Image (cartoon, rainbow, N blue to C red; front, side, top):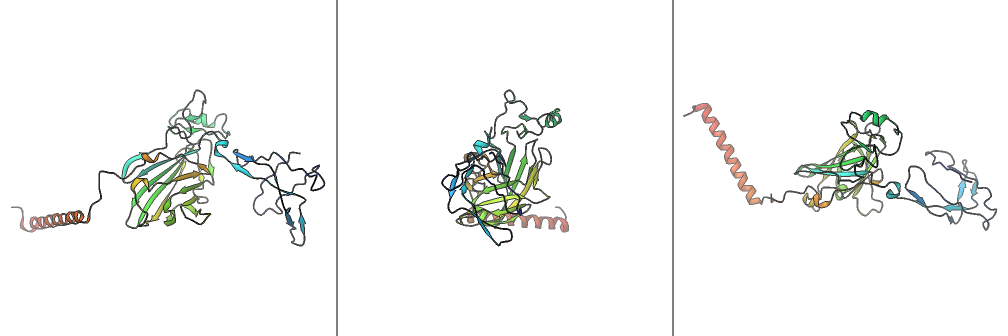
Length: 324
């Protein structure tokens, strides 16, 4: 009456078959199953009503010699909603760059606000003398995050740092930090949207796969850890982070550091949309340092060469002629 199905691992023979009793004996009298629910991999899934599929599904026997047709086949569509899964987001994004001293941290209260009165134990201070007892105490196995106290209160923080600028390339460092004392994120993944992913050349310590299902533009990438190296994101602490660097080739028609172009448009961690800072807060290029014209650059180069020649001649005279 209330069957439970399990998604079998790849390679399992025949998949799974369910014999439904007392559901009718013909296409006219058969009754569709109701109230489908997906409990794994977690909450947040809502399933619609079963719709009859025509023609019914056909199954081939393991030896490939005969075909069996199901009496009736139904199709059930289940959708996932982050808002149904949990009240608040699970991750946030911080931004920084080599050309600006400003570090734009995760927005305040990205995943919730500190409120130990109504929700005691929801966060702990990193230097608290009771840290060990709280982490190892009652509720240790709970799925409710126990995070390090912070202005953003997120279990996961992603830091995108524009690290360097070369003649033909530019470099980014990504750091994913686990602020959750209750969870090791195994086999995590990060999905990043940025227009320059079409020109990514090297990713140093993450796996990478381009995501362009419609074949229109390659601006989205999935990143995940290397097996036995950084595919396990440990709980909060010294080992609670993974890092990698990405090297992009410059496209002269699109590349610029102006107006926050070097920062991602969206970031998802394990399928959850991360809270991004407001675009007007991005560490943009300083507006008080205009670009040098070719004439100004040439004048500076001439002055620099003259100074080097003067110092060199002065040192040679001091060495061989003595000081006057």
